[in-house]
Amino acid sequence: MAIQYRRILELHDQKHSQRSIAASTGNSRAKIGDTIHRAEAMGIRPPFDSTVSDDDLARRLFPELRPEAKGREVPDYEYLHKELAKPNVTLTLLYYEYEASCRQSGTAPYSYRTFCRNYTEYAQKFKATMRIKRKPGEIMEVDWAGSTLKLIDRDTGEFVKAYLFLATLPSSQYSYCEACLTMKTEDWIRAHVHAYEFFDGVTEILVPDNLKVGVTKHKDYEAILNPVYRDLAAHYGTVIVPARIRAPKDKAAVEGTVNILSTWVIAALRNEQFFTLEELNKAVGLKLAEFNRRPFTKKYKVGNREEGFKREEQFALKPLPQSPFQMAAWRTATVQPDYHILVEGMFYSVPFQYISSRVDIRLTRDLVEIFFKDIRLASHRRHYGQPGQFATLSEHMPESHQLYLSHTPETSREWAKKVGPATVQVVEYLLTSSRAERQALNATLRLKKLAQKYKLNEIEQACTDVMRVAKAPTVRVIERMLINTTRKQQSQLHQRQNDFGFTRGAEYFGRTTHESRND
Image 1: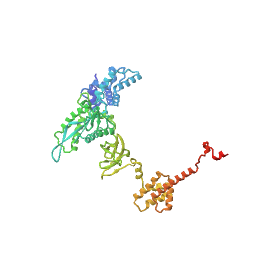
Image 2: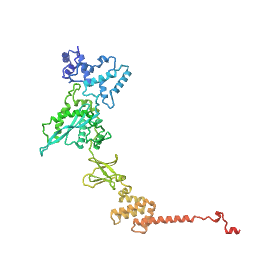
Image 3: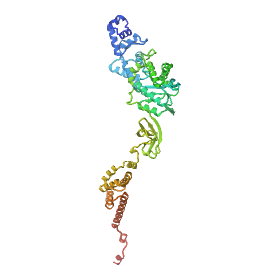
Image 4: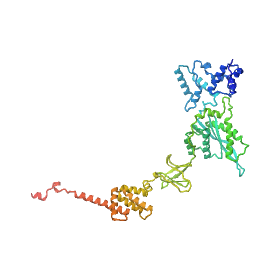
């Protein structure tokens, strides 16, 4: 008697006992128990598509009983299905590994053709999707729907258009959509962030249409991406591959989903009224859930999009970054002579070497980043509030400006201690004399600059001499004393060189003197 595998599993799913199943099918309780055990181990359970026969289930549950399996190593199709989801893994590679395993175990492998046919039958009968064409977790296709939704303006009663953003994973055909008031960059980027959060992961590749919000222009057959869109891809670790112009097959999944969702969402909501975008998106979310849970209609597919995604694609997605993407705005500016740029009323410093250069500025909610030919020059916390605020980093200043910025009464006293006690007295007098603090600091700064021309012991000696003869020392007197001391030292050195000189006599040149001739 033929084994009624399908009937056995359907009755077991309805909670019938094995005794009652045996009475209903006429099969032995041992065979029924073996069938149920293998089905549970392989995750096979009703409901089945109408095309799944007892022979199909027999080949899946008991592959060793197939005629062609006798004497040949039966592949682990569940393992093949999982491995094929990994990047760069193909059926050709898996067959090579299967053949090598058979040689090691001394068993005969299937031919490559039979190997592929058996896997295809397995995937078509028992999986919601076919991985031979689309790898899970590889691609997310995005686009705007051709039709629009509508809102009602509470004040005027006029209709306001709302545009439907769509994102589809071709492998499982699991989809996301939301309504936006515009098709501008801000809504386009925000919808992408929401799509990644909905899928709870990121695909390897992002395939958009050639929209201005994503692709700025084409140059030498290469798409130039919008800088914000490029930042989004970098943040999520994905690669943007725009569809070719007039090549709908490049994003066939989303093109097909556009037509279906236009009916399932847009047409289904045509008679309902919405006054806010939140109300509209709540209704769109309900219709989207119905769409993803709708059973597949094609005969070789089992289950629905949501089940297929959770079972066969979600595991292949890359994890989301720790924080969602923050959209940035881009500006350009010229570095001013004071090595700052002006951004929305605020000033931010740039290394002084880039004065007069044209730079790119990336603005987020919290940061201001400055770039020159793709090289990041500076990063500042973004300022808000009263215009005219400065954000200045000392390393961006010339050396002379850094010295001036770091010059305070405390640093002046610390420097004087390194020179000597007389210098400490002079600095203390300059700082405590009856003058404005800035004027006093300027005086001590001029004194410190003398160290660029004179040795510290010379400065200390000059301060000692000045404090001996003056009650109110000034930097000008100290500098003049240093100049005089230097001149005096140079004069003394010159004099010493003349004292030790000599003049060669006539004898040196072979002449005879008057005295030598007389001799």
